[in-house]
Amino acid sequence: MCVSRPTGEGRGEVRRVAQNGGPATAPIALRSWYCVWCQNHYQGEKYCIACNTGIYSIEEESWRENYT
Ligand SMILES: [Zn+2]
Image 1 (cartoon, rainbow, N blue to C red):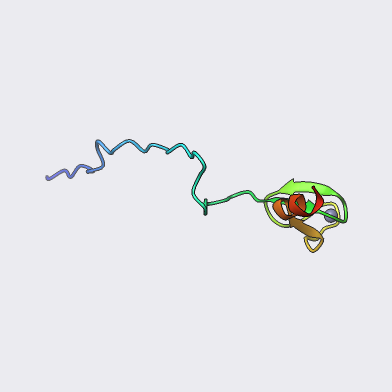
Image 2: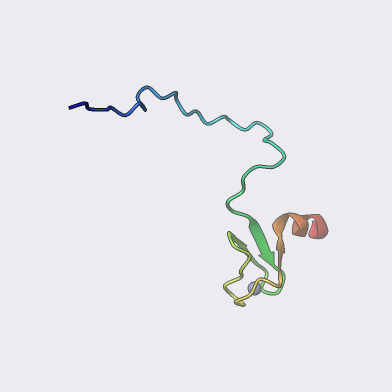
């Protein structure tokens, strides 16, 4: 019988490149939000658990621009 071996041996190392300055568009898994209604900071989905909606939430970046 012919036993076929997986050819995945010796894969190159998967190195994670250090991000110095980072690319303009990085894959962002977690976004930061700020609910202006509850004054609640959170991350992830645009959904404030305090008021059960995301309509009062703005991106924390834009919040910083406007309020700092
Ligand atoms: Zn809220």
